[in-house]
Image (cartoon, rainbow, N blue to C red; front, top):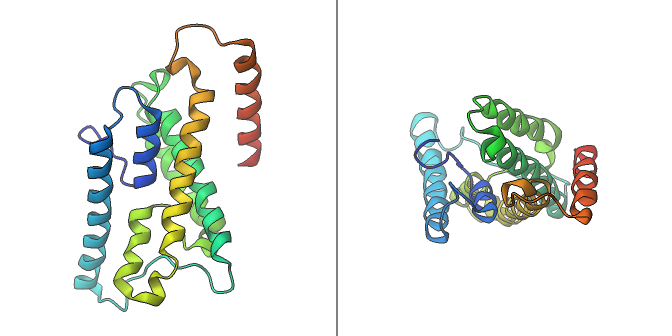
Length: 193
């Protein structure tokens, strides 16, 4: 993480870019990170094929009988949680020096896989979801789910972060409206997840 920030997914890269501030990639580097992440995922899939064969390697797939829009919503919700955890535990001044953020991030991914993985295929990462294109048209039919859902979740997490972590952007005390909205939003998000 000390070289690139350890985003490993275009959704987190987008959320960190939209968060802004120290450590956020430029628009150019955001695109480079995303291309690198997709390249890494595709290379990883082909490496798996070399070791265990294409037919033994898996890929994300929307569950039979599940509507792709449901899978997209699942991916958006879990990725919102993932990006929120990353932004609040790994990028804030208050958490500087925190060595345990990896556990929070990992358990968020685990909870997503357990709760909605059977519906969405569990790829809360557009780069990993892109591996479906290597398996042909039928497998890649829902690749949009793995881009639209997670990127929407990342955008929403960054938007919520700007409200919830207002102190990252200002030394001034919050306005009366923000002092009311931020805790209410936090309670709503916490209750939702």
